[in-house]
Length: 303
Ligand code: GUN
Image (cartoon, rainbow, N blue to C red; front, side, top):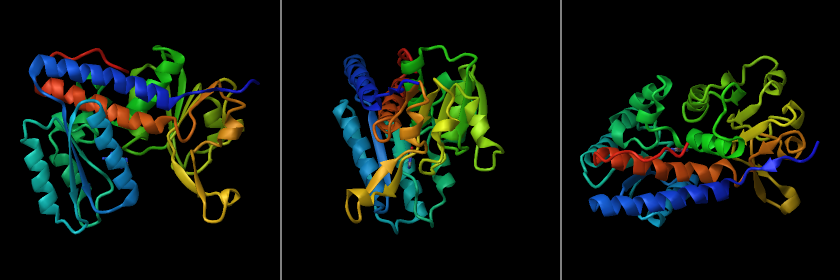
């Protein structure tokens, strides 16, 4: 079996950001407005700090107006809710993202439910979850990681995924469930597998499309992948890498890449696969939210 095509998430994310940069310039021409993104970070979690900085930079680079709100870890729930309320009512802000996880004393779902659904560029509000599951994807804001995974699938397989067997491994609200909804809307036959699934290797072997989002390093083995299948690896796991020197680590996905690459038809690497797409789709969602809030016609969907 020849080696798989490596799906270049970095290059595809760049092409998406280029398109959005053009669309943001067009919006500025049409309305005199820049898409406005507000990113809220509560606390000093180092990984979250990196994500928030990258989101802020990507938005600026596309010509957006990006505002970062950094609050200390002991900020009260009431103060976070007050900030969301203020952003909900700010006409210059079209997208609001509250970085998760929040400190334990803050009720995450209370905060997420307060965000106006029209500004919910993470797609986590129950209204957006409901629209997506009801098959009204094009009226919703869709969570960024599954949306980015779908872009990668369509750029690899073409626009028609109809009839394919898709297995999503993982049932999280952020990735697994919305991914399954998106694939169902593409007329795939969708299975959601998870840690309690019986005979998981055989379930995965039946898949033309595998989306791995379990958060367990290299759990999905190469011989679980059907010959020629397309593999989207959402996992980002840091594991010790003593071969690189004492105390060193490296990033791996949820799929054992070196094995899987000899079975799959196409596969995303980690890093450089799904990761860059997540931020690109946040930018897409923010532009979509801006056009809707400004009552401008929507542009052609990118996925
Ligand atoms: N933390 C990890 N992933 C995400 C995400 O997609 N959105 C937000 N808001 N926080 C996260």
